Structure formats: C-alpha cells, structure tokens
Length: 455
Image (cartoon, rainbow, N blue to C red; front, side):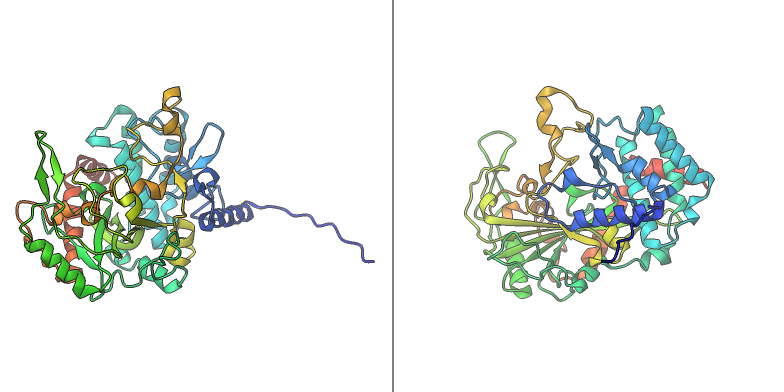
C-alpha cells in the first residue's frame, strides 16, 4: 500500500482573491432564495483583495449588517439611503478618504487599463457622488468626499473612442445561449432573454414620448438611459397597429373622479391581448475624458413582464392587489460584474424567483443597516425583488405600463411619436433627453465644478 504524502497549501493573496471571486460567481449564478444574505465581497478588479481598486470599491460600496454579513459588492445601485450616515462621518468616512487619497497619490488609475473595468468603476463612483451631493447640497462633511471622488472619476475616464468600443453586452448575453430565448408558459418562473429585443425590424417597438424629458422618468438617474419596449404576440405589424389604435383613440387616459384632484383609469382605452410582453432596458452612461456624458452598450438591467392574461380590472388604481397580481409574470436580468469582467454570459445574470435584496426604494430614506428602532423591524428585512415590481405595475394590461402617461399623455397624442420610426431614432432621442436633464441637475453641476478643479 502506498503511503499518502501530506500536502501543505500556502494561500497567497492572489490565490485568496481567485477563491473569493469563484465563490462570488457561484453565489451569483446560484438559486438561493435569499442571495442577499449570502453575498460575498469578492475582489473584482484584481485577484489581490488588497489591490487599491478593490479597496476603493469596498470602502465606498460594501455595507455590513450588525452580525457582519456583507452586502452591496455587486448591486446595480449602491446601498445608500437619504438618511445614511455611512461615508458621511466616523470611521467609514475616514477609511474612504484615506483610500481615495492613496489612489490619487500613487496614480492608481495606471494599474488597470482595461476599458470595461474603468467604465464600471467610474460609474459606481458616480452613483456614490450623486448620493453624497443629494439635492445639490454640499455639507461640510461631504465636500472632502465629493472632491476626491470627482478626481478619481476624471483619472479613470475613457476617451470617446474607448467608450464607443465598449462591448455590447446584451448581444453577448444572447450569443452565449445561457438563457432561454422565449417565455415558457409551462415554466413561468424561468427567466428568458429575447434575442430580438434590439433588432431594428424586429417585433419589439421602442416607445418614446419624443418630449422634453425621458420617457421612463420614474427610473431617471441621469447615469443610465432607460428604453421601454412593447411586443404583441402576433409580431411587429400587430404591435404597430395596436399603437396606432391607441394614438388615434378619442378615449382619454384617465377619467375624473368625484373626489377633487383625483382620477380614475379609463377602462375604455384600447387594450392589448394576452401574451403581450413589455421590457425595460437600462444601459450605462459614463463621463468621458472631456467631461461629456456618453452612452454605452453595457446593459445594467433588463426587466420583463409577460401578460398571460388581461382582465378588465377596476377603474380605481390599485398598487397592491390589482389584476397584475395574477395576470403578469415578472423577470429581471442584472449586471454581474464578475461575469462581465470574465466575458461570461454578456455580464448578465437572471434574478431568481423569491430572491431578496435591500433596496433604497420604498424605504422612506431609512437605512436598514443603521436603523435600530423596534417599530421599524420591517425596514431591516430584505424584500423580494420581483414581487416589488407588482407595487407599481398592478393594474389591468396597458394601465400597468406606467410610461403610457408619457408617450400617450397630454398635451396631445402622437406628437411626432411615429410608432414605426426607426429604433435608432428612439434610442438617440432618449439618450439626448437623458443627458440634457442630467446636465441641469445640481448634483451634476457640483461634479463639473470638482472635475474642472482637479484638472
């Protein structure tokens, strides 16, 4: 019998980083019902956890619960609330400032040249900057943080040529064949990714109001462009015909209620058929080396809704128990940084059924990591991601498509909308209006000032 030789392993920082990266990716691709409670803050930008880019990401974005569980390392939006004290005072602010100072002093922007990593890193910094400059106010405690973030953002900025060369991640996700291409009514919880969503002559029609502001205004941040798509089951022509019917209908969107300043849904508005699908595509915007806002083809999220039935509903707006609670199936794909950097699956992952997260939405600005009031226990619990969609989209059919108020609403319908206008025109319009609106916001004006001061 051969004697087994004892093996001794030495875990180097690089090896540890690789292990954590694999753990993070496994969790990301897993089917846990509560991924939020199992998140690992793995190194993203280099295998060495102590790499300055990893430490900067960690110090600004990763939160810890009272029992030490980590959150926020790979979320679409940072876990920061209106009333958050994190980064505004104390140890977290000191560590963040020290890390940013080290980044600037050592010219750490030179350590990573890969454009996709630089774009994502800058975009994450930008989200923190906007939060710290809430409503355009610069408090004494936030000035130091804002100044340093703006400097780092400028250091890692891409040229316009580099921005235009960033990967088209939605197309890459489709090409990977990792996700089903169609909705399966026999398996209504299985997420699917339409391969023809962005095909110019495909069945999906991009809906834009062609107005002074972006169409999906409720989702606006200015750091992303949002595109709304509609697809009827019989394809492009059926979708166009339905939209023309909507545009020419004499029926108003809403009816006046007997209660002053209130309105009812007009159930006589032309309705789309069952098996209609709606999609909301979110794509990243970055700031280039000249300080200009440029769109990218990096997809941050895709939200999909399939109407397996369309009931008549009620004229009263019901955001809790409306027809959508039984008429729609909800799906979502999100940016996964480890997969994006590894060029796997187009950098997208499917949100799992019953998957939970902490969200800055619907929390009254209260930070669940800092709130300890006994009566607010519900805020400290992560909520189901897909279930949250029903909160805003719970009415009957077309009435649950909230952007209809933009592309159908007053002052007049079909104001140059042109339902059959080229996809590129709608995308360019939404991009232009998103950039225009962002440039008027106080938080962007603060960014511009610090950006130029760092030159």
